[in-house]
Amino acid sequence: MSDLTDLYQQVILDHNRRPRNRGKLPSANRVAHGDNPTCGDQCDVYLRVDGDRIAEISFDGSGCAISQASASLMTTRLKGKTAAEAEKLYAEFHDIVTTGKEPEEISDVGAFAGVHAFPARIKCATLGWHAALNALKGDPAPATTESHTD
Amino acid sequence: MPNWSTLRDDFPALHQQVNGKPLVYLDNAATTQRPRAVIDALSHFYERDNANVHRGLHALSMRATDAYEGARARVAQFLNAAASEEIIFTRGTTESINLVAASWGSAHLKAGDVILLTEMEHHSNLVPWQLIAQRTGAKLRYLPVTGDEGLLDLAQLDRVLTPEVKVFAFTHISNSLGTINPVAELCARAKKIGAITVIDGAQSIGHLPVDVRALGCDFYAFSGHKMGAVTGIGALYGRRALLDAMPPYQGGGGMISSVDFFESRWKPSPERFEAGTPNFGDAVTLTAACDYLDALGRDRIARHDSELGRLAYEKLSVLPGIRLLGPKTGPRGGLVSFAFADVHAHDIVTFADEDGIALRGGHHCNQPLMRKLGLTGTTRASFYVYNTPEEIDVLVASLRRILKFFSGS
Ligand SMILES: Cc1ncc(COP(=O)(O)O)c(C=O)c1O
Image (cartoon, rainbow over all chains, first blue to last red; front, side, top):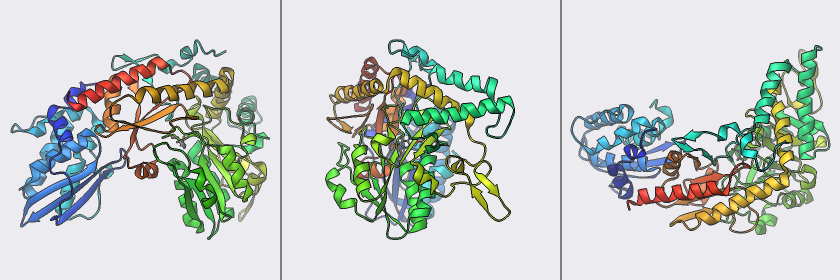
């Protein structure tokens, strides 16, 4: 097994301890719920989309440190982005957590590279992202990690 | 002959390193390890006696039938059932409860009837009743749990156990709280109003002496893999009079007395409920597991497991911020379930694994109870005959390390 400090990096512990943009967003005009039935993790993502940009974003939920930190960091990444930019950022994040490769530009998401050595935890890391993308699409069906192949 | 001082030697899987540390296996409520005697019984059967049962007239088939029916008689004796015919082999607790709910339920439940459960039921003693409730129009009702102490709120029993209740199903030992329920009393109370009783014995079969006649239950369901036997085999005990009046659960070979193109006649229990080739290969391991546990002494197993549960509860209670579930005093099964506000159960399980400790984290198939308690899950350490007080010390030290890591100090 890889060293757990690779998985639980400082950035992750910090976001887990002091989550950013946590709680309901009263002005939200898009909401999506994500859940991971195998482990019971839950994540609601709230967006206020203005034109084609995410003007505000927040999340609420419960789960392991990986899922909570990932959702927290996701909100900081997606704020101000368009749907197309969000898709691209998710693709990059997905690459990081499944292959362990470092991000092209130095960024906090690199802290999630350690997840790839713990395949059972990839779903934890992607839960918030799935919910956010669903909210963007206005997809009313809850995001569930069970229907995704990662 | 197994013996308490050398017992760990009987379990091959215990003797290994995990992540460079000696394995500390504390996930026994999910499944126990198997003693050598069980593993040997399985290979002995396949190496010598394997043939289909009840069908052949040749030597191997007769030996296999003897082994299979011998296992039934052994389980009947283990539970103190009145007759072997009261033991139906199934895949385990889940299938046993589904069998009762579907077969007894379809014959006896109707709109206006009530199925009484408790708030601490495992999903497998809950979902099968939801399914039959939907099909028959019967309603579900719950006996509440008191809160973190995890006791059944017996003061509410008169309120919920009304004449509309036709069946009362409850667990003997809670898999997420460690509570040992007063099942004999619950059965007696149900009997007074004419309701049948179903005990989920998944967590009691391997841990306590179980005497179905002394308990006074109508059905008792259990899984072999939680008592040292292998996966894929378990049983349903049912009172003969009830079984004989129940329709088949599945149709197929072995369960009929005659088949016509348009209708068939059923054999009596247990064959009526065992359609198709039964799992005789795994059933023989129940005999070995019953023998093993009886040689250790089930009273002594109960004391050992309960003492470890109590000791773990006490030793964990000093950890900062811990929320412990289950009875604070009184009888307790061999498990402890706990949560921390700031560290999620799955993070604990991942870190404990690094120390060689096998724990379970999550809702333990008790989602409604967890929701009621305002929890998304707990971490659970569950004990069996081979666990020791020293292993609890290893657990406490590991938890201290984890708490320190997550608090950032
Ligand atoms: C209380 C309880 N009931 C039922 C079950 C289900 O047992 P099985 O999965 O072997 O059918 C379990 C085991 O997880 C349990 O702990």
